[in-house]
Image (tube, rainbow, N blue to C red; front, side, top):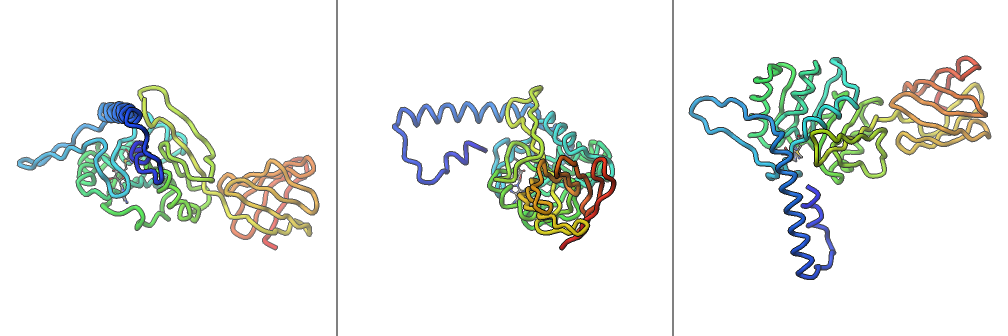
Amino acid sequence: MQIAIQSQLPGARPAPRRLRLAALASAMALALACAFEAGAQAAPAAAQPAGQQEYVPNVGQDGKDVIWVPTPQTLVDKMLDMAKVTPKDRLMDLGSGDGRTVITAAQRGLTAQGIEYNPDLVELSRRNAERAGVGDRATFVAADLFATDLSKADVITMFLLSTINEKLRPRLLELAPGTRVVSNTFRMGDWEPDAEETVTQDCSTYCTALLWIVPAKVQGKWDVDGQTLQLDQHYQKLSGKLGSVPISDARLNGAEIAFTVNGVRYTGLVNGKTMSGKAAGQGKWSARRA
Ligand SMILES: C[S@@+](CC[C@H](N)C(=O)[O-])C[C@H]1O[C@@H](n2cnc3c(N)ncnc32)[C@H](O)[C@@H]1O
C-alpha cells in the first residue's frame, strides 16, 4: 500500500532513468515480499456450493479506497490483545477483507461485525465464519465504511491508510469515551497512539499495531470546591491550572482522568458535566462544569 501512495505523490520531480529502474526493482521486490507474506498466511478458501466458481482474492487487488492486503494472524491476535477485548465487547472491523479479524474476535467470544465494500469478500467472510463455527457472532455487511454508523462499537479495528484514518478521526473522537481503536501500521495524524507494539514472530511486513483510546471531552473550565480547574485538551493529553497552580502529568485514559497539583495526585472519572475521584492522601474530590 505504501508503494501505491509513494508512486502517487504529487509534485515529485522525475528521477534519472537509472534511479527510476532501481526504485522500481526494489518496489517490486517489496511488493512480492508483501504478497508472499500475506498469501502464506491468508485464510484457507471457504467451502463453495457445488457448481459455483470459488472466489479467491488476490493480495493487492483493488478496493474502493484501499487495496486488499490481509493482516498477518499474529498481528490480528496482538491487536485484539492490545484492545483488551472481552466477550462483552462489540467489535467492528472497517474494511474487513476475508473476515479474519472479525472471525478471530468471535472465536474469543465477542460479537463482531465486518464492514466490507467488496461483496465477494463479504460472501467469502461469511463462509469462513460458518466454517470456523462462529457464523452467529461474526457477521458481515457489504457497505462503505464512510457511510456506516460506528456508534455501537466498543472496539474498532482497521488496516486502512493514514489519510483514511485521519478522515475517520473526527467520527472516532465522537464515540463513547473508552472506545478502543486499533490500526495495523497506519497512524492518525497528530492524535498520538496510547500504545504501539510490533510483533516479530511469523510476521515480516505490516507488523505494528497502534492503539488509541477515545478520550472524554474535558476542555474548558471546571469548578472544584470553589476553585477553577482550567483544562486544555489535545486528544488524551492535558495541561492547565487549578487556581493559579499549573497541573502536571495530566492525561486521559478514556473517561479516566489523572493529574498532579502541588505534588498531590488526582485521579477520577469523567461523567459528562461532572467528574469525581480521589486526591492521594487527601480524600475525595469532585468537579462540575463551570
Ligand atoms: C488492507 S485490507 C484489510 C483487510 C482486513 N481488515 C485485514 O486486516 O485483514 C482493506 C480492506 O478494505 C476494503 N475497503 C476499501 N475501501 C473501503 C470502503 N470505503 N468501505 C469498506 N471497505 C473498504 C478493501 O476491499 C479491503 O478488503
